[in-house]
Length: 474
Image (cartoon, rainbow, N blue to C red; front, side, top):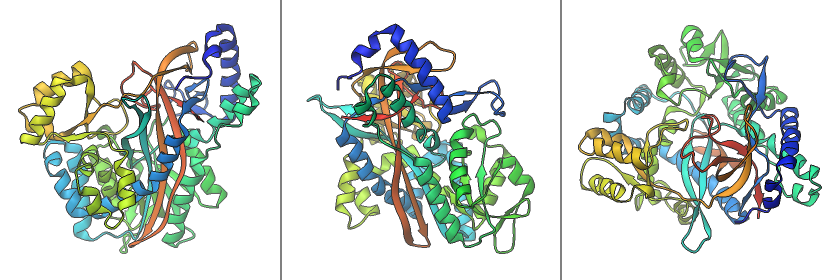
């Protein structure tokens, strides 16, 4: 895929002028982050990093990613309801990974007491890269699915106007018209609104579990504002606030500061360092309540790397989605090679494979938030250390996806505009709502394209590596 911005990327003077215009437009559109110096205040803000030009994406792959999203929604929902599958799949992982074990403990406690919630809400984002095939054609391959705190739906709604502006400044109005409209925050809010409505109490609120230091607040506010437009009020609280002011009544209805909560939307709670003992207790309290959690604990577990790896085993999709061969085929077409590292012959073989050809694999722990995966020499050292240890069961091995690099210009606060070799990652946002056993909503609601310089192996926008982008369909 040759870029058709090639000649534009050579003219340094023009790039600098375009970058100034693009940054001003991004600020005007609300493509914003709080600064790392002042993460708790919106007094001083900066633009979120983005590409100067939209990046080329094959239309067929974009359409494929959209077409399979509702299947992924069904799959995540099916996994979350299959206690035996989750228990069996995570049995070796929870012995070695304390974080997954604690989540699983809450899952078991809630099952034992009886699940109080009747409305289930999934807001997820399935992420892909475009694998370069031997014949040069790209193929869509899934990196992961994020089932908790899937972010950037708000800012992704704001970036198309910026790229249209850049192309319009260059008098490329036809090209500007090809940039897709995209409004994930509206669709994500639609899911929350549906769950709120099904909860059935007009005075109840939506509780957003927020981090104390949240640079990405404007992304979240976009969803809050969509809800407020529907007259649904959102309160933002931390886990600490919940342990101090949260309570359940005898029907396990959740109250915070005396106000009833219909939906709990987590934008925190996906990494070990986000939990103190007090926070774990707060999570358990929320989980025991009859409020719709996004996600409930089983759905968070359904998003683990270990589950992803087990789903790629022959027969697993058929077992979870019986009588749906077309959905199974669409899902399986996006799977990259995934390998278990559990103790035993299968795990030994996977390790031997990776040590023999390290450039072809990536080692993944059960972690979200970017910046956790190991590549190349780092992976080799880790595998040599883990080889004879039970601890290896807390990782999975994945075939490394090798996209075709391309040139774009990355804009970051405090850095000069730089033209670099890049690769992109495409995310599709999915929303589903289930009441008891009935699925009442299942849809895709938009996309997110993130682009990074090829020297950065791992990490997203929040991790400070990737920048926001838009697909230019070709």
